[in-house]
Amino acid sequence: SNLWEVVREAVEFVNTVISPALTGKHPLQQAVIDNIMVRKLEEIRNERGSGALKFGASAIFAVSLAVSRAAGFVLYQPLYKEFTIHPVGSSSFDDASLVTWNIFYNVKEVVRKEYGQFCVCNEVCHGGGISPKFKDVTDGLKLLNEAISSSRHSDKVVIGVDAAASEFYELDKTYRPNFSGENNGFSQRVSGDALKDFYKSLVRDYNVASIEEPFDKDDCESYSKLTTEIGERVQIVGDEFLVTDPKRIEHAIKEKTCNTLLIKVKHLSSVTETIKAVKMVKEAGWGVILASHGSGETDDTFVGPLAVGLGATQINAGFYCKHERCSIYNELRTIERMIGRGGHGRDFYVGGDFKTPSE
Image (tube, rainbow, N blue to C red):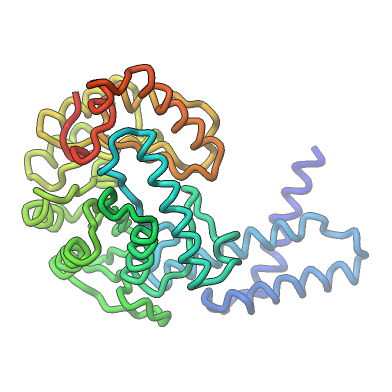
């Protein structure tokens, strides 16, 4: 078909024209690489006519994104490291929604002041949040705490960190998290113990009460140490570490390597297996988070009732700036009103008991 021919020609253009032109270039030279690709496209169109290679811009954009991702790996700075806010001091889901929206508005103002309007309008991550180029982890936490303070909700909110540590775990079982943010690609290797102490400093200094994927999925020893030392007051969330696998969960419970299960829709093998996993962690006294967001979401709101039915203590469906997330949160507000707040409302919204299993 014509569509297949266009795709084939685009792939051929990347392999035969773009690839040789970029061989040997460093992925941190984003602007240089992008300019080379644009010049190559212009050269071919000057030779063959302006109508040639109509797919060219799309092919160049795909390669440009791949270069950006490669730069992230060179710097040991995954592009999707996240900070989250947890409105644990709210009295209802409606109030939590208002608190979250107010803080997000103030985050935009703080980021606009520090990084400019372009960042607020264009640097939006897949979860719906803002994704500025922070100097380092603590810089992002400082800005987030400033926004929370400006919103006057400091007494209602704690912060979560998704470290995605598997992305900067080395073959020698050390980590290269690039604490300093120096763009030299040679950040210091640190041990699991050193990384553990860094997380403890974030808890102490920045009101962090949740840490997701703090270590590589095979670094059980570091997980166990962190959970033992701060697990009473901080939720240690297993993501790739558990992948909603009953066998891995059973081992984690036995070794006390974390205290919260993150269920991702993409990890689910079946509803029955999910219920089994949730029962296991609840019996162990763990909390449960249901996360829906990812690429290719639809307006299907079933994840909301699923979270309530499973008794999940938290849900992470991204932020309201995308309509599919609004649909999920609106469904949860409807459920809260159906249940009623007179006595039962507090049971629906767990608030400060977010680390405690819900029935």
